[in-house]
Each structure stands twice: as C-alpha cells, then as structure tokens.
Length: 360
Image (cartoon, rainbow, N blue to C red; front, side):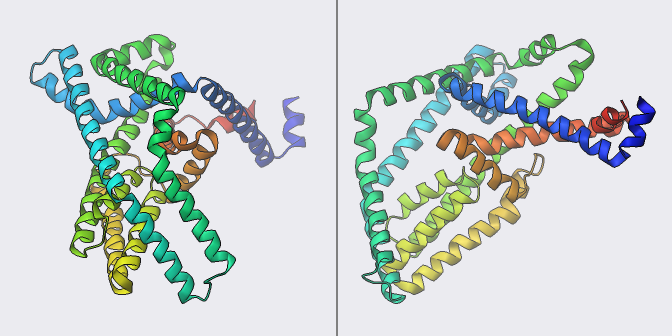
C-alpha cells in the first residue's frame, strides 16, 4: 500500500496534502477555542488583561523582591502603585478630554468645511456626510460619560471585570515563582521542557510588547504635545491624551490621532501651522519606527506591519475594542511560540511535521 501510494501521488502533492490536514486541524482547534472564549468573555477578558498587567508590572515586583520584601507585600504594593498611577492617568486624560473635547470637535468641523470649500464640495452630499459624522462625534463626546453612568448593568460588569483583573494580577505576581512548576505538572514529562520554553517565549513577547508600547506611547504623547504647545494649537493636552491612548493600537491609532491634530491645527491656526503640525507628527512617528521601537523592543518579537494590521482586523471582528487591544500581544505571543518551535526543530534535526505525515 505504501508503494502504491507513492506511485499514485508525487512527493510534493503528498507534502501539500499533509500540510493541508495540519492547517485544517489547527484552524479547527483555534476556531473552537475562540468560540469558547467569546462565550466565556466575562471570565476570559479579565484573565487576559491580568496577564498583560502582570507582564508590565513584573519588573517592579522583582525589584521589590530583591529588596527583601515579602512576596505578598510586594505584589500588594505593586498593585496599589499601578492602581494609583492608572487612576491618576485616567483622571488626567478624562479631564483633558472633557475640557477640550468641544474645542477639538468644533475645530474638526471648521477644518472639514474649509476643505470642502477648497475642493468645491461646499453644499454637496460630501459636506453633509462630514457634518453628520461630526455631529455623531460631538454627541458621543457629550453623552458617553452619562451613558456609562446610566447604564448600570454595563458599568457593573465593567467594574467587576476590572476588580477581577486586578485581583488576578495580585495572585499572578505573588505566585509567579510557582508558575513553571504548575505548568510542568500539567503536561507529560517528555514534553515539559518544550512546553516551558514555549510558555516563556510567549510571555516574553507579551512582556516586551506591553513595556515597549507603554514607553513609546509616553514618548510620542510628550513629544507631540510639546510640539502642539509650541505651535499654539488649541486642545494640545487633549490631543496628546488621544495620542497616548492610540499608541496601544499600532499604526491605526497613530494615524487617527495624528490626523486629528493636523485637522485641528488647520482649522484654528491655518495651513502653515497645519503643515508644521504634520511635520511634527511625521517626525515623531519616524523616530518611533526607527529609534524608539528598535531600542525598546530589540530583545522581543518584532512583527511585520502587515501582520499587525491583519491581527487588528481579526481582533476587531471577533471581540470589538477588546479584541483590538488584545490582538497584537496575542499575535506576539503566538509568533514567539512559533520561533521557539522552529529553533528547537533546527537543533534537534527532526524533519518537519508535514514530511513525517507524508512518509506515513
């Protein structure tokens, strides 16, 4: 039978068939896993957010441990510190956006109308469409806070998920020394080393993404805000807050926040200042892509822009804004696992899975 099979199907066809089987199996398992996560979203999302928070806060926890602080106390202090920092940052960002939101929306409206006048679209359906979009944006900015307050169930669920995520961060930090042992106890002894190495690479990818993105987001926000203040663009702090938040959505967030800053400058300060604002945004983005990110994330998994855009699209279609936030770190973890498997395959000299399946 084996000889007949080799005569009926050439080697490349058998290899392709084996890879198709592997891809279908992996895709099926991934689809089932994603559907289970969607159904269990109230429990899964806090766990994923807690893993992101743990990856970001683990260096501080380790520093406290080196200072001879008890593990529970160290984890508690770390969570308290991040709660204070995040709470203060959210407060400052909210105040900045609330104080300047109307001004930003009004500036965007004037910018759209100026562009319509310049290109002869004034009074056309294009201008009406832009006005409708800005009206919707203005209503969202004016009613988002009240909608969250009045939506008791949504607010309660969000608060419950946030509290659960914070508690999980505490336990993940406190028991981080037991994670490897617990993982090894769940898998067969022969594959324990491989599973541990895969888990380490996945966590390193998430850890590098979170730390690198936070540092780069802060640098981008500070530099662009400083440039907007020098150019006397209105709503500089609010626009800087948008830049900081948008940095957690690679490429897309930078484009949207930069376009908003340029439009506001065009509406209130004219074409020359708008061009200077565009220059500041492009210069900061160029420094980010060529200096900041390679410097900060040089030891972690770096993803191609096309991979990031596909991951963002898939995340948005699966889980909305939460999917957008989790798409890139999840992809970084998956890429880290793939790199680890490839490295181990080269070292061991084992044939690829498809070839083994084809020979059988």
